[in-house]
Length: 197
Image (cartoon, rainbow, N blue to C red; front, side):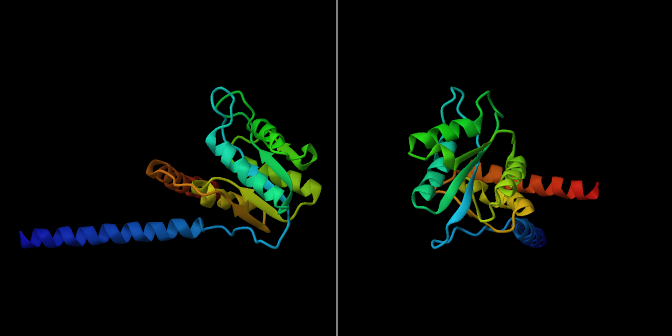
């Protein structure tokens, strides 16, 4: 029995070490991004899209992302809002619905730029990069949800060098956190797969 208990203890230690090393590896590839500096005015805030509700109204995530961007604009921290997102889960174009909300919050139409082709985070940044290059915008803020920050930053880094990221306060559920955790592993898997090809 003592030997069996010893084996259990060794197995437990091995599992703990494996989990620790795996997480060190994961978060090495998904580091925490930098936040905006108070004394800098940025060219544009890129607001990452999120699906609307089934009836076309703004989802809670969309509204919170937009409120973060709107707040930055009213504080004169950014000059433009670039809203990215197509229609993914339903027929409502995310960027259009989010922009409509911005207009009701006293954001001038000329400050809004819409990107309506992106269907995922990678495409959000890919198409946003083209728009930023066309307008010579170099100082970038990317806005997303707290749980999405690390994975979004992984893609932001592929297209931008001079960027920071901003979000809002939120207590994410364990389910949301676990979902995002496995999405990061999935992202790494496909990244490695693409490199091999």
